[in-house]
Length: 120
Image (cartoon, rainbow, N blue to C red):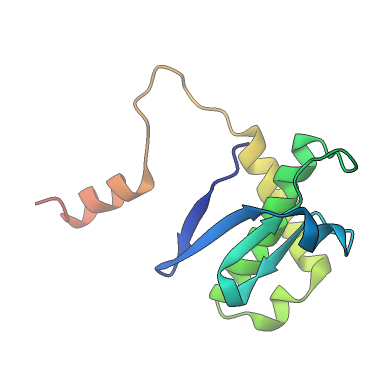
């Protein structure tokens, strides 16, 4: 699963940064930094080595925090059990998704613009 450099939620750009100082001190693999619109992930280094699957799952975990916050569920974004369950499902869906190699790329934004006539 590829981890993006940035993405948008409700028009706000969320940056994904790698920083071993913020996460290493608390023994987390990632954190949602709402004030600065960023997800901070623990990079692999000499002392800390995580399999790619754990890094991707950490990204999904922090993404779910942001999704719940943006969707207007501030109490749920703090519910680590709920965030963890949803993030594991999201990670599994994204990391096991299968695509047809010979098909044109499918982008939801293109489909929506065709349905609404936005390209006319």
